[in-house]
Image 1 (tube, rainbow, N blue to C red):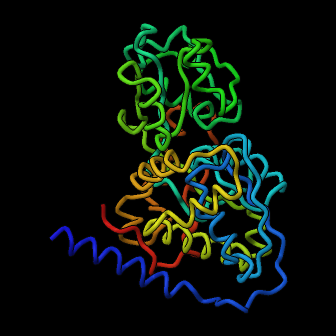
Image 2 (image 1 turned 135 degrees about the vertical axis):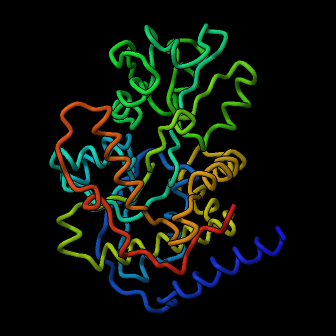
Length: 338
């Protein structure tokens, strides 16, 4: 039974991949420049973009893609809203909050159908859970999505959002700062969970946001609304190629990781493979399995907006369904059932 279901899942994705390969080799044309600003330094969840670029898929679609390293979802959302990049990767709730306050952002594909957000600490530092966060320091970058969404988390667990002190820590320095106890807590995505387990073992404390009922959509591809209106085909082609690349990585992440490691220094393949295994959990929900890989559910987006209105002050009224579109996605590409 399990083997049959797995085979059916493979057929679903592979059949969609064949349908998606509408531009064969030799049909490359002069590409239109397009900048994609990442939410973070490149890791496994960005590997499909590097794979598609290395394979010439974007070029074949008429796109001259530049991938820019990011400094957090908040920063990526600001850059796309200001027109510094046409497209970006950002936490969906962060993008929605920015849109409600006037930023022209529209999400065109979701990568993390489940929130990757989590907090990490050392049990030996006297922290048993989030109730003990009060009076402590949280280390992360200024543009980190968990800072933007912190008031929602704090109020959900019943502590004052102002009761912690944020410390600016680069992504690369988080674990060192936690080990050296220059910070008490750090935020990070679930895809790097295995690395922390290896380093800290039983002393590691962890809480995933989704475990306390905070499960907004996570990383999504966002577009500047003006770009979307002026160049819908450019955005559509980028989304189709990227969706195809993610579907290929779901089947075999090896080529995508090879492309990532060839482009980005300082990464270990074993760690990136561990990350991808966690990423698959985050990508899978009933909508990505039943509608399309990368598809949003309108009801969930509305619930995420309600979350913002509940936990943040002075969130302007907007129509949640204006914050996303599924129209560029190929419904032949779906996540196989887990």
